[in-house]
Image (cartoon, rainbow, N blue to C red):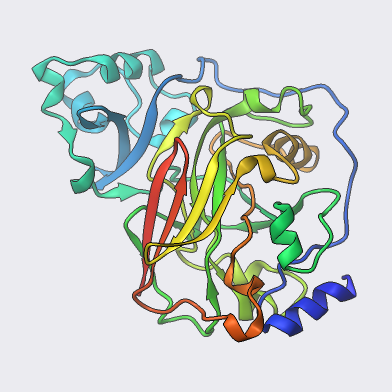
Length: 335
């Protein structure tokens, strides 16, 4: 591990936001991947809804959120009713698109107002949650690090999943240096191994807001970051999962706010390794599956990057917002 990373950890009394040694080379193999037998949906914005049926599928419309499970129970069109089923290609996706387009009274009765919705994480059962460190140049600079030559990968777990309007319970953590990281997240839609950068985006189902909540004093205990990144509820996703055809992931304004104050403001065109590279590189070493999530990295402005005398760590009652162009806003509260 580079000495300058250790210097940064000591200077900030925070987590290493630095890198491990570079591994691997560019993917050169042509795609050999399998995916959904049905085309991935287009032009739709999804969410999940928590309720007495479990965590079920919702579709955002101009007039509210369509509760697909309730509509399907009555109308029996064959549409998938959970996010997991949708990402697995189960059910009739064309029927789902037809439900989303209907405007008659038989469908509008199943609408939920967004302000009244009990959101779940917009992806509910990913096999893998891959995270990327130091992936904005200004963030690398505030960490006193060189921009990494290849993506720096680490992980979260399903137990890290959280949702819009959720809470992160910091009162039970054996730590004090809590920090925010607003991030664009990729959600895979097709199985991929050794895919080229040129083809990588064709494997994407959609994009969403993510919060890579980080605990710096835990992250900095060793050269491995996991314990400071993978805690319970430390990976909120959503509220919306926007299909890939509606999003240019290389040009999205991204902001992170604390109690309404903008702390991070950048654009995904500042990513060191863009979404194509992240997918291609990851697929060199593991098979990406439908529903897998990639946190693409955070811009500058995290607390750990402040001068030591200006580091005021997050506390109970703080409200964290991730705002990304075309993908909406995600809010979580620390308790």
